[in-house]
Length: 292
Image 1 (tube, rainbow, N blue to C red):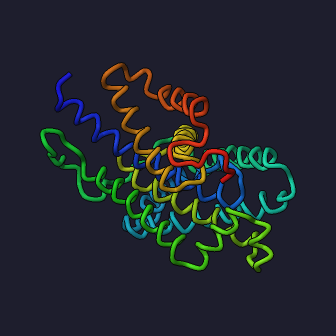
Image 2: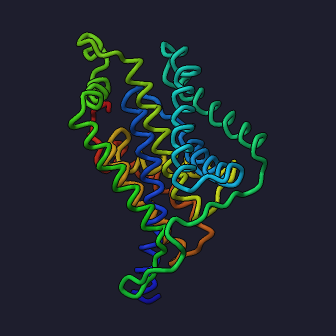
């Protein structure tokens, strides 16, 4: 194995890791506001890619407009999930709420299967497919779109939470929901915002990923699990940690597939998850002994 090959695997892993990072960011958004792990996050990724592909082929929309429609539609699905399933059960235990998100994931996946069928749907590359050389290795322009989307999402979330009233209110709910309510912050509204933002981020991940792997009604299941592993690795509830965890997981998967065997690619994420839970349950950037 030459250094150039290792570098190539590293670059490929960054692309996959960027997708995991966006999904992990969605997990962190919902977890911070509700304390719930939203296992429907992977379906938001699927919806972003599928709606983009379908609107382009059926309605002949340009890529940018189809992507915008996909983000808006997926955000509405996230808000609907909160209003119809999470909010009515807000007094239930966290375990019940998590089971509700699992059921929502199955429902969304099944509904997509009925509406769009089992076939894969292509989405054209945003900037062509001519590889770009970087120090002897190559990377596709679409990979740069993935990494750019990850960077923009990270910066946008940081700006929202640091400099906007809504972001500060969401942080207050995450730190102490009861105190936040005493200060006049409407907890249910913040939960709705968290689901909407998580759905939008998931849709963006699905849109930038679709030109690389195509999209299908069931792609969200494994992506959601990998994103969850990334969130745990970085520190559940820590957005920056989730992004870091996603990038690390993507690189380790690519290196493991290239240096060992591609048969173990999916197992790497879950082995890493078990190791993190045993060694440092709070994750890389999580705080020990503190409930996020």
